[in-house]
Image 1 (cartoon, rainbow, N blue to C red):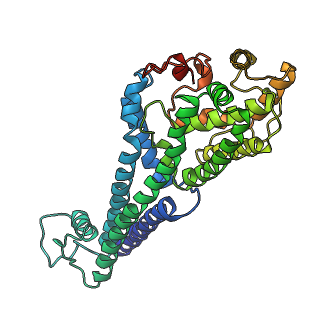
Image 2: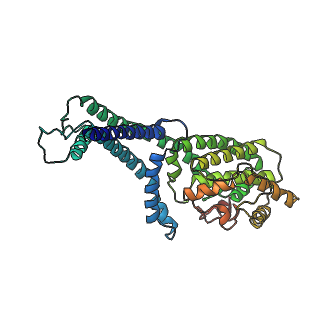
Length: 380
């Protein structure tokens, strides 16, 4: 009987060590590892919180309400994941304390069970409260090590926050600026007509040069700091997903149907964009065709493409004559990012993209005319 009890204590003690080690690995992978690591322990907590938020902000609710509720998902998840890790460490050490005999000394009479005594000692040690003293000789090292791990977890998360908000700020800078050029939510048609009217289409080159590094940083930050995917913009109708899609669509339309000189920077921007959204989608285990064909179907129909072309043509944007060739070229670009982009729209609960909205050029806007500037101010 004593042998069986000793064996049980050994197994429980090893389970406690494994739980503590696995929790610290989860924190390391989530906060310090400079690459995308989809940790199952942390992912479990995020999924539970996400489903809770999804239940409160269900699809039957108005978008504005859902946006307000889901704006709290990222910060709340970060707070809860720290509590979750601390709880797991406390539980792991409680198993270790019980295994080495805390609360089981027959000479020490207490009114609580051994496991409660072990939990009490573990919580006191983890939070450095010091109200519970170990009853078994030789446990001082364990108590100190648990207090150290608790402080490390808190310090890691505190140090993690400036990195998150720094990356968030850099991401949002271009997302906010995009409203000036493409309205909000951003539209490729509005962008092309606005550039053509105000600057000339040649000025698009400078924009491609701005957005290529944005996509590169987006990939790095949103896979190594995946909680950023769920950090919503300050404005309800802004979204990094919509911005990414609008930029790639603008470049795809410019390359396929707009009659303008070849600019390879547009190609590089599209490639940087679809690589970024693909790798973020890979982190969330999104299934898509990694080697699509030019004529594979996408979520954009030929009718939607023709509607966009009609608006561009009416606004005076020069278009290529061969519309069939243009459609095939556009679809050939779109297949590279259509499925992962649509998946990220659902994951991040982005506003409907410009394809789902009435087609309008920069000549049609809901912005008020101010200062008696006439319609030209609004049309720009």
